Structure formats: structure tokens, C-alpha cells
Length: 94
Image 1 (cartoon, one colour):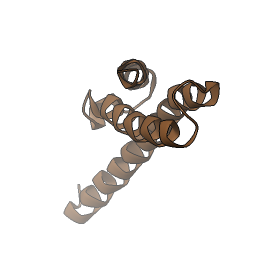
Image 2 (cartoon, helix red, strand yellow; image 1 turned 120 degrees about the vertical axis):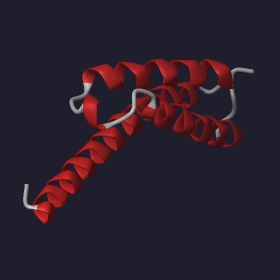
Image 3 (cartoon, helix red, strand yellow; image 1 turned 180 degrees about the vertical axis):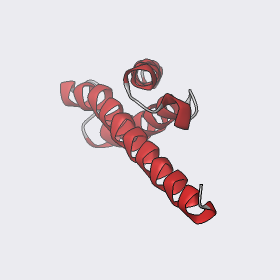
């Protein structure tokens, strides 16, 4: 049940990342939130198996890491999209 808390915080961090990062016109509105929630689920599950549910490290890592992963992945996707768009414009000579 506690995993819901980590997932809700991750969704909020991903939504905030959508509005804080540049390139909103090149990605979907839910992409950063989806990345954050997916990574939070994996991270929280792995940490509860290794460190336990009541460990402070579990919560610290499970709340901070998904936000960082979401920001990094979103920036990488936007940069890849910009490169692909530039290559397509070059190929079409426009």
C-alpha cells in the first residue's frame, strides 16, 4: 500500500518536470510523468526487497531518483527528437 505514496509523488514530480523543462511542443504531456511513475515502481519494489519498507533510504531514494530519471530521460528524448527533425528537414531540403 505504501507504494502508492511513492507513485503519487513520482507522478507529481513528472508533471512538474513537464512544465519546467523546455521542448514541450516536442513531447507528450504525460511522458515525464509516465517515466517517473514507471521508474518509481521498479525502484521502490527493488528497495523494499533489499532494504525493507521502513528504511529511510528506501523512501529517500524512491522519492528523489524517479524525478532525476524523468528529467534526464525527457531531456534525452527531446534532444533526440530535435536531431531527428533536423535530419529530416535536411533530407527534404527544407
